[in-house]
Length: 321
Image (cartoon, rainbow, N blue to C red; front, side):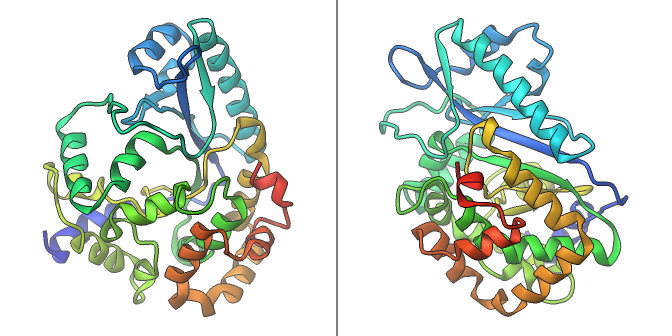
């Protein structure tokens, strides 16, 4: 799939429309059997939450991880409170059926741990990742994140938002990591398939972010149908363009009671003009060293103090709880 063909499809992902400051959270959680500790089939979770008001926000990852995709709300305080409320209700309903939730970034799994979601997309994805190494199966079955979704503004401010998240990413990841080293979630992602994850500076090449992203997409092998849109859905950068908002994908999963500092810090970085521009000026010299900084964050040797400063000075225990 060539860059020119991809460019117009990518442009739809870079289409911010309004200066709003909503906050959304997507929380992934491991659902485990209370007795055996093993992962549970999503059907058990679906049965436990049937008829609940929050059931429409529940989805699943391939290894059975529960994904709560809550609607965006007016500010970070409301988003954090909503996540805590829904997670508590979900946990109580599941416990009544012998299922416990765990908000950790990586879970040790046996090689035979099943992939519960079966579809042509996931079959093709697993087959492709198997050609790269074991990290793909580990990522699909045994990792979880707390993703933050923030509104993306039009014009120059929106370009600043995109750039600051890409430049700040490895430092924020270092400050908020809940696991490091070769068994950590970030190390797993770095090993999955570098052609489609972009833990480096390639999304910042040139003056046109659409062209840079189209080049990134063209460099990744295609393994699913659905044309350009299908292919673009198989790219996993640390920050994903979603048209009207930006999906911040790199934070490790954390309990719902420990997300406030992360969410507040990211919202402030994107929505406060002065703070965003100070960060851009500070981070500009690091652009061509992003690959090294991501590797350092995964290894546990990243610049934690810089990451905390970017989050507004939050203490390590607040953002990596």
